[in-house]
Length: 250
Image (cartoon, rainbow, N blue to C red; front, side, top):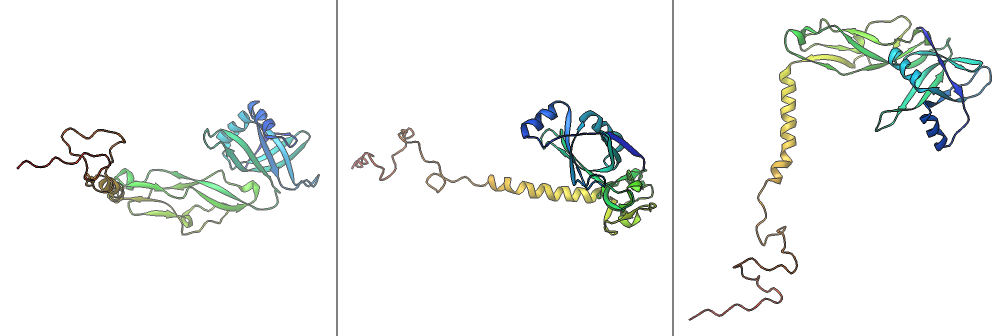
């Protein structure tokens, strides 16, 4: 894997207000984890240019081997975590992990489907992409950008497991070999699932449309305090302040 250079500046520990000011200036706070062979420091507080880093992500993806330049110091690192605002999805923080080029590490690698499945093109099936990344162990220089999976022979009822992924030199896949990556199912199967879900979702509505409680039953709405009875309606028996019923004519 090719190493990509990224400029970073060291910083002091900042208050939340100062962190927000930093973001408004177009910089993103970051932390570099891992012991430095030169200084013996565990972590380094950094900030990076937001626009430059976003372009790097779009071009190289998150599985990129970096050479972080921090003034006169430089070190190899990988992206450990990218944090975004929950609502706006705006980048708010980045974690880097310092790496030893002679030691293996574990990373997640995205899976990319290549080709067109005949089960979809010729027979109207539905392609399901179930597992979208796998964990691998390898040296930093061998980290794959992504793993391409050929689906050009995938027909209805057929699938691809982790065990079927192409072998890459120096890369050990750690994800369960029996885990399903992708398959093609008949459209009728999905229609049945959708129909069952629709029926289940409609049940509460049927209950709500049941018989309304009649006047005098529990749950019937009581008249507002002080409201006059409807025209022609006799007052309720025993109601406080109600006039006695007129005697029947003989």
